[in-house]
Image 1 (cartoon, rainbow, N blue to C red):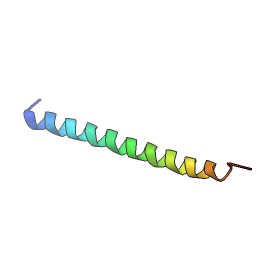
Image 2 (image 1 turned 90 degrees about the vertical axis):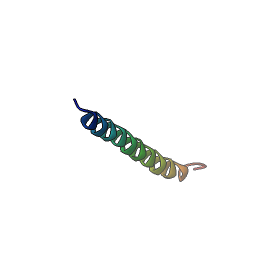
Image 3 (image 1 turned 30 degrees about the horizontal axis):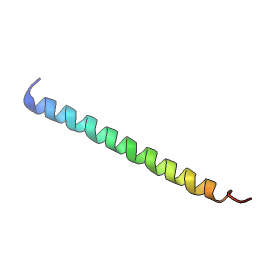
Image 4 (image 1 turned 60 degrees about the vertical axis):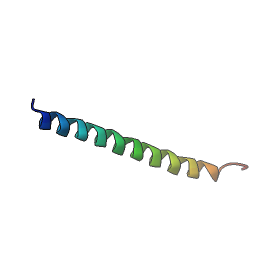
Length: 41
C-alpha cells in the first residue's frame, strides 16, 4: 500500500468510528430524555 492509500484507509476508519460514536450518543440521549418522563410516576 502506498502512503496515500494508508492515509485514506486511516481517515475512513477514523470518521466511521466518530460517526458511530455520535449516533450512539444521540441514541442514548434520546432514550434518557424518554426515561426522564417516567421519573416520579
